[in-house]
Each structure stands twice: as structure tokens, then as C-alpha cells.
Image (cartoon, rainbow, N blue to C red; front, top):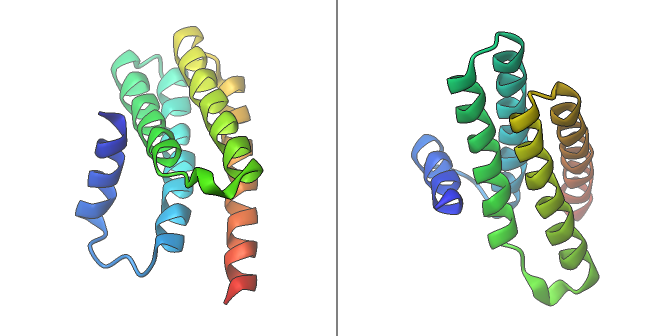
Amino acid sequence: MYGNLAHNIYAQNNVGIESPQKLIEMLYEGVLRFNAQAKKAIKDNNLEKKVYWTNRSIAIITELVNTLDMSHGQVSQYLQELYSYEIRLLSTASLENNTDKLDEVSNVFKGLLEGWRESTYVAR
């Protein structure tokens, strides 16, 4: 459910995505954007928006897990475990209204985004 939701959101909004590399970048950016919205909702004590934005982040990360190519060995395995941990952390953050845990997830995705941009730039 979550995986298809994330893909459909980006497919609807970005019909002309140039490459799979760009899609990954956009998914990472989406997690960061949605986490910021969830954090604001927690601070505003808005339960409905907190759940909505947290679920959007979880949907994206679930899509990332579902599209991993496990033939790449240790890197894919590491990412699968990392993404799964981040999903659990987001769920806990939402249940506990814990913005520190949201920040932790965001920091991980900032690092992933930076590394992804560097690796795709080098590959060009």
C-alpha cells in the first residue's frame, strides 16, 4: 500500500522525471519535506496532520525498500536495514510526539541525499 502511494504521488506530480537517479533524489527530498511538516504538526499539536505527514514519509521509505536491487550485495542489505530502522523510528516518533526522533531520521536522509548527489555527479 505505502509503496504504491509514494510512487503514484511522484508519478502524478513529476511526469517528466529524467532518470531513476533523479527519482531517488526526489524521494529523499520528499522524506525531508514530509518530516519537516510532521515536526511542525507535532509542535502545533495537530494529530491529524502529524499522522498524515508521518505516513507520507513512511510510504516513501517503504517504496525505497521495495525497489532495492538485492543483487548488489552488502550495500543493498545495509540500505534495507537502514530504511527499515528509519520506518520504525518514524513510527515511534509519531506515537511519542518526539521531534528529536524525526530529526534523527531527517539527518540520516540528509546524509543519504548528499551521498546520492555526489555519487550520481561522479557517475556522469
